[in-house]
Length: 419
Image: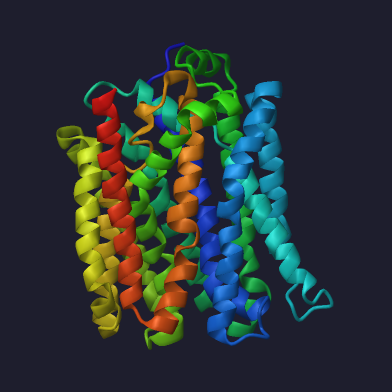
């Protein structure tokens, strides 16, 4: 049986949609639900910041999950590893959906359990790495790698549209008290179902003999950890920082603006979610366009060009977010377009710099570190800085991500030239 790149792309897209849907369900709930349910003792701003702290736990746990589950894969195989990840992910998401709030008899234990389940989600998502994005990159026809690379990235806007649409429906369909009591839990029930179905679909795909043979032929197998970090550790850091502009922008146009609107704007939550959904469609268009452009000018050239545009955009962020509803909407829509163009090529743009036998492990850990450094703390940092020091500091935060991307791309080119 011959496996076409399109077959691999379907598996990548399934995995990414489920992953991003889960992330955005939790991210939106961190703004609309968790401050009132789990942190009612704190003012709204502090409660949202506490919720964003717990939000970051999954990003901290994810590289640990990748590392631990790669050890499991080396010993027991890809199937048992992904099955265990599925069980852990399902248990964690179900645990959140049934968790009583701070006002129940659990009290502070509810916050502890929320944190434990969030860590479980991060470990499971790290463990669910199947290697399909790397396999897709290596199997793409020459001159079409940008096009195939963007396919998996479409999971981000699709997952965001699904999560935002679901929360918009729940938020507007039930009374506020009912939404905070039980309405929000339906989103996590749906996330549980989507993740379980998607992970089973990927599991059935990657454990087939044809795919196993293709993984082995491409040398996409877990590497020895000690040898990997000794010889390739620097490339993990360079690769993760190479996508930092895109990952920093990621939550600054999705989760953070929602918290800013709720706390400091007169625009309604449902109207703002509608604008974000429209912006996500623009972002999806930007991702598709990125595949066409990258195949003409090169993926790394495109990442560098978009980092410069994101740096310019960062300078206008305070003016737009302080510009009333029109300014807020323009910030979102322009931000989503830039995000789509940059994020469409941000995954694995420098994975070719890894030695072939280290590429499987390197791709997993590079992605995890990029999420941790670029996106994991973005809502927390952006809201804290803007609330206490002004929106100008959000500009500096985004600008620093753009500069890190440009620096990492320059270092990567210098290393290639030297070698």
